[in-house]
Image (cartoon, rainbow, N blue to C red; front, side, top):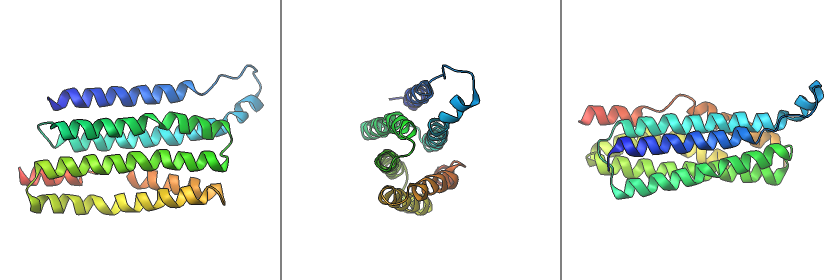
Length: 194
C-alpha cells in the first residue's frame, strides 16, 4: 500500500473526529452570557481534546514522513490507533456535559491512555520494520522517555479522578504541553540512517 493513501485516510478520520467533537457543543437558546458560561466545561474539554488530536496528527505525520512503504502490520496498528482516537469525542462530551464528574474524568483518562498505547505499538512497529537494530534502539530510546512519562501521568490521572479531579486535569494538561511540539527524533534517526 502507498503511504500517501494511509496518511490521507488517517487525516480524514482525525478531521471527522474533531468535527464530531465540535458538533457536541450545543448553541445556547438564550442570548445572555450566563448561557455561555454554562458551556464552559464543554468548551474546556473540547479544547483539551482538540489539542490532543492535533498532537497525534502532528506526530503521526512525522512518523510516516520517515517511511516509504506500508506493511499489513502497520496498516492494522494504524487502524487500532484510529479506533481509540475515535472514542475521544464520547469521553470528551460526557466529561464536559457532566462538569468533570469523577467517573467521567477517569473515563477521559482511559480515552487518552488507550491511543497512547496504540501509538506506542504503531511507532515500535514502524521503527522496527524500517531501521537496522542499532538505529531502532537509538530512535526508540529517544521517544521512550516522553512516552513513559505520559503513560504514568495518564494512570495517575485516572486514579486521582476519584479523589481530586483538578489533579487529573493538571496531569492531562502537562502531558499535552510535553507533546505540543511534534517529536522529530524518529524522523531524524531515519534520515541519518538512510
